[in-house]
Length: 233
Ligand SMILES: O=C(O)COP(=O)(O)O
Ligand SMILES: [Mg+2]
Image 1 (cartoon, rainbow, N blue to C red):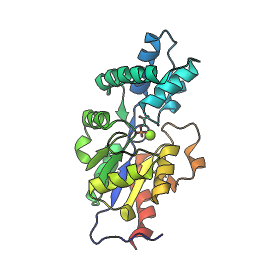
Image 2: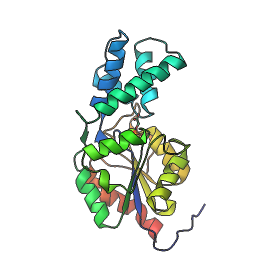
Image 3: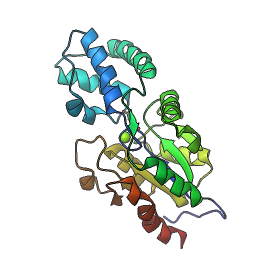
Image 4: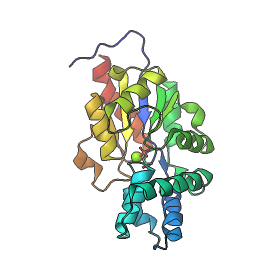
């Protein structure tokens, strides 16, 4: 289906957050471990728990408890989720860092006239706080979390509504992500997707058939040019 491109719409690059812009596993798993320890369960090493990230904090707790062989009732999961949100909110940027080359890649895109946005399954409040603490919050025209709209990834409307809020258009957009969720979301929205292989996924991203894979943010701008040139023609 051809999408009509309105005149003079700036191109937009939409980024996933956890595992794409920033390596957040240390602090997410750090909070998961606080919760597990409060429940008398053994904590999980980051290398084992990192691939449980990607579907939001509630899923992370659920997966952590499954790994420990402990059942959770929905009510108790709600209670642990509340505890998680408080602890994580207070410890959101202790070990978390941007991946190498992110700030430069954002500069390059901005210089080329791109709008930048974030579409994450973190709650919006945490996404805003984290990107501010990482010193890049002001770069994004929209920062849309799991609770921003009624829809969240892999529902493609999370992505299309993010684009709309940022002032872009789906026909001049690209998504950058690290997981199956991001790739499925973008494909269902009809938007090209670039994957990074250093994030959180239980399957190598190449197998999920993104349009391109980049190993470092240095490669982002040329990759976007390759994908968007045919669209702009
Ligand atoms: O916090 C999560 O589990 C997922 O967040 P992401 O969508 O930014 O990868
Ligand atoms: Mg991610």
